[in-house]
Image (cartoon, rainbow, N blue to C red; front, side, top):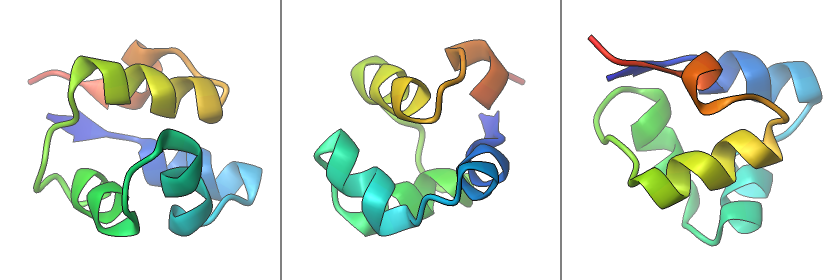
Length: 63
């Protein structure tokens, strides 16, 4: 699954570490999601979208 997390995160000036803390995961998890190496759980996808002020379907693109 592709995503636009990095784009939204950078626009808000949020680091991977800050996003990870907000979502209760480690920074490496955010890095893996951004680099398409890991698909987040539904719960994590909603936490990320809430933190980045975006809808889940704006952030994640199912192929």
